[in-house]
Image 1 (spheres, rainbow, N blue to C red):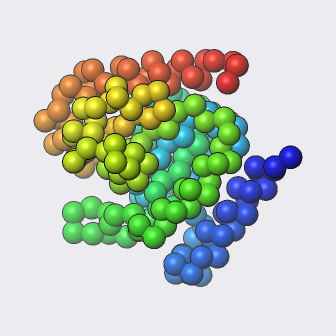
Image 2 (cartoon, rainbow, N blue to C red):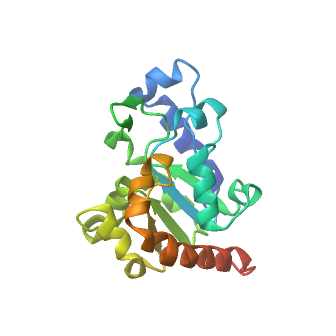
Length: 200
């Protein structure tokens, strides 16, 4: 019988020892994600922020506060890996750019293909931002994030697509009030239904 816990540990060691991460590993910075084989809901983000990386706790910032509010969950629930798996497209803080943090490194994305087969109890994958949506949805992704999120219902029940909850994204949220008014209530209902289902 396949041991998914062992597989996940081997993949983590592969990430740590990958030459593309040498600059992080040499400073004893470890990949930032949390998941186990029993995770029911998988949240795929962009990359850790500097505050999250320094604290070694993923989504440990204002973006995380907003995300948990959208999901309708407590911190205890959010950080329970039997409930939520938290894996960004890049498991390390990519650095600062001119307009916020740099994008996740594309050469890192293939580790998702190794991790996912070991998450045998996942009922829902929440794709946060366009990088995650483009990678996971492939040809089903729309031409931009707004149009992808507008197609929210078409990706259910496997995927939920949402914008990034960063405070820097306030212009998008103000310009698209339909997301907060119509989509967020749906998200919390779907998430709560999965968490409350004892048969999962």
